Amino acid sequence: MSGVWVFKNGVIRLVENPNQSGSDTQSRRKVMVYLPTGEVVSSYSTLEQILQSLGWERYFGGGDTDLLQFHKRSSIDLISLPRDFTKFNSVYMYDIVVKNPNYFHVRDSH
Image (spheres, rainbow, N blue to C red):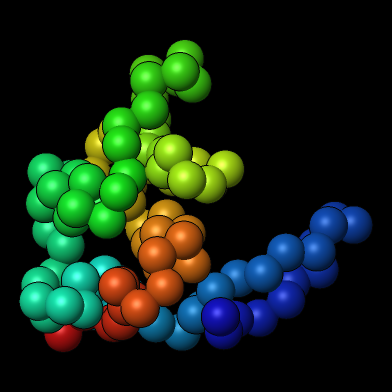
């Protein structure tokens, strides 16, 4: 994470990459790669197939219709993702990576 801390009107906040243009920011988007095949996860249907092969199941008990959720019977872990794939960002990617070590990697898109 890079940026500048700005103190204004009694509030401090982080302004990330203040000198980057929009095109630079777009090129720095993250992608998640499924390591066994080298495939970039580009949709929830692909991700769901991969997660199911790793023992994850859809979880419908959360009650939040804005989320897709997956759980493993063998653990207490729960993966919660925004239903809209365009909102799938590095925070959600790293959550999947941590809960599935050696299967996924997050990198800059090129």
